[in-house]
Image 1: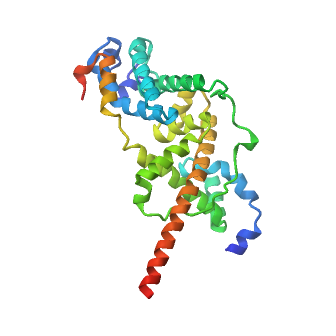
Image 2: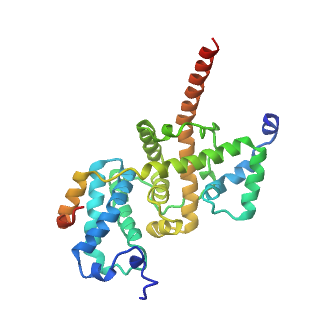
Amino acid sequence: MNDIDNKVELEGFSLELLHEGNHEEFSRVVETYSNKVYRLATKMLNNQLDAEDVLQETFIKAYRGIKTFDGRSKISTWLFRIATNEALMILRRKQPNLLSIDEPVETEEGEKEPIQIVDWCCLPENEYLSDETRVRLNAAVLTLPDNLRVVFLLRDISDLSTHEAAEVLGLSDTAVKTRLSRARLRLREELSGYFGERVRIMRETLGKQSNEISI
Amino acid sequence: MTQKMNRHDHKNCRKLLGSLSDYVDGELGEELCSVIETHMTDCEDCRIVVDTLRKTVDIYHMTSEVETLPGDIKERLYKTLDIEAYLG
């Protein structure tokens, strides 16, 4: 394989050292990606112990399997594939009737019409960064069905490209785009309920203040 | 504006819905982009859906970056992998 084909080198790691079982090089991979793998697992599973299991299993399997990894995909894509499979396995164990991840969702009724039409883009920046907002954001993600949630997390939380997410999940790029679109529209709907209420409260407070001033 | 919104039957809005995610990512072809943009000048509802959809994606990007791995979990991971010596 030439250097251009080797995506691992492009990420800043030596595939040769990794194949030799070099601990220092492997620890650099862990340092770079453990945050992201853990974040994906917590948001998939909503359980710290399960997320830690996924984190550990991912890097144990990566360490054991590194010799079979050929560097044709990025090492991060490979790690996310292991982590996603581990997380889905835990979900399936807990909910045996779970829809399979590769089951098509590209059906007619998939696109729900937006109901919440409130412009909440005008809120002050700190409203979006508060602890309460963080709780709401996580809760909204958990309302998504697993096959939409995993796509949203890989694309918008883990920052994978459409093609990388497709590689992780064994789906086509088009299927990833469709699922991402549905996930985002549903999240927008969920958040509009919450932020719409914040806008109403803000307007009421401002109205009250301006009344007080005019008195 | 309100009169106009009430008059149109939102058939076009429904057709465009599936393209909005690509639109906010800037991954939509020029032609469809201009269809959406023209439509938004006449349809306040769609303008709001697009703006709040873009904001939804932005907020998740913004807030996910600050979350990090708890120290004790990181320590246990390094111990399991036998790479404690490199714990940063």
